[in-house]
Image 1 (spheres, rainbow, N blue to C red):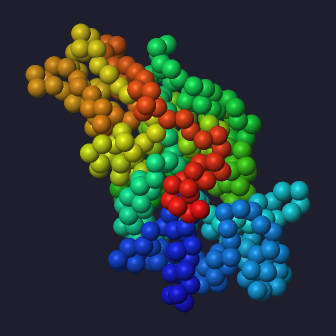
Image 2: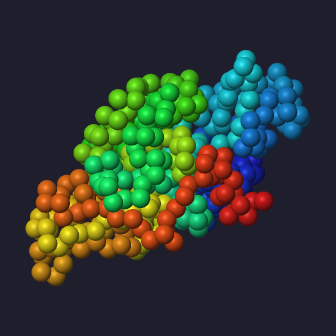
Image 3: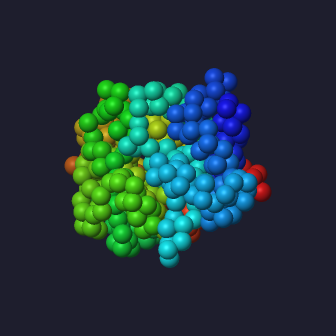
Length: 354
């Protein structure tokens, strides 16, 4: 039984998101809580491309009628991706993060949360080795000025207005913290899912369908609470996460770095107009990366460019027009891949998976 979980851990580690081993074996404890031995064995037969049950049955060396109900049940649990299109069922391997974990928002237990929190620093460290990340940071609308060289795919309203199907789901990071009495009190309905992903979430009873205007309202409320907008790292994103620096596993671990700016994809950074700054510290208080501090005199804000991730939250709180966003240098600018498949393929190449 132990052997099948070790094999599944290796299988998941060979996905773009990775699933690195640890000395404690906490990753195996997580898998045992999510997968039964039979489910783990069947997951080993899946790849990150949709395949019909016939193909999977052939690899599993089992009859299709035997594995099809189990595949559907695994899809309902969010352990694999079940795609229903044109009256046909296909199934696909999910990576652990972003993937399996986010679908567990309604299956969390205190033990699973404890094990995940023990494991996530190893996972984030592994993912940070890749040049290409799974998410990117875009500036909040209120921080955008006419001097910025900003593309359509970097504007939140444009990203939302392009969508015909939008669902808002609970943030698993804030929910897990709330369940262990460490919640921050910020809005839980904060994950926007688009297109096909929205239909999949809906079929599993996760979240609710909303309009474009409702999605923009959620984003505005999130910004007021100091949440950082993070779309998937694509020109055509499949989701936008509204993240806090206390519960979000990605942001909270990046914040521990001495140079968070090197670990995110963002084309902007904050700057201060010394003449307008009154030293009110509003920017310092809202910055999710502790990138703003007062100078030695305590009268003027100073931005640490190694820590600034270009979210623009500081601009929204400044009443004196002292904070603004500027473009990063051309060599530091990031152009995201077109689609999620392109992003995963790029990460896979960087990892040497092919």
